[in-house]
Length: 219
Image (cartoon, rainbow, N blue to C red; front, side, top):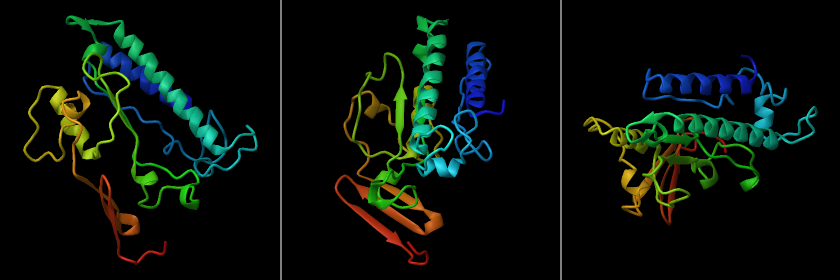
C-alpha cells in the first residue's frame, strides 16, 4: 500500500487477524502521519510539514488542520471496526474484546495558534499535554476522565498489571490501574518533562510549573 489510509487499514487487518488467531497478545498500530515519506497520500498531496502547520491545501480547499482531523477520524473508525470484530469472538465467559486493553496515545501535544505558535517545540501546557485514552470493557468505567498527573512511563506498568504479571524491578513508572478503575483520584504529585533538542526541561505540579533552559538555543 502507498496511501496513508491503505497503510493504516492494512495494519488493522493484520492486527485483528493475528489477535483472532491467537498468534499474538499485543499489537501496536501507528497513524503513519510522520512516516509515509513526503506527504499525506490518500488525504492530500500537501507536504506533511505544511499540513501540520495548518497551511491551506490548494487541491482540497481546506486547511491542514482539517486534513489532520480527517486522519484522526479515519483512525477512530478503524479502531471501532476492530473492536466490533473482537466483540464477535467468544473467549472465556465473554468475548475477546472483554479481555482486551486498548491504549490510544500520541507522543506530544500541539499548538493550534496558542501563544502565537503552530508547532510543538516548547514547554507550554498545550505542547506537553498529550492524548492518553485507555479502555477495557467492564473494567474501566465508560466515558470516565481524570485530571490527575501521569507520565507515559506509567503505560508499561499498567499493561503489565492488566496482564496479571509482576513488573520487573527495573521497570520505571507506576500502574495507572487504580486511577482508571476509580480507586483513587490522584496519581503523581508532579511530572517531569524534557525537550533535549532545545535543552529545556520542566517540573509540572497541579498548580505550578518550573521551567529550566540552558539558554544555548534561541527561542
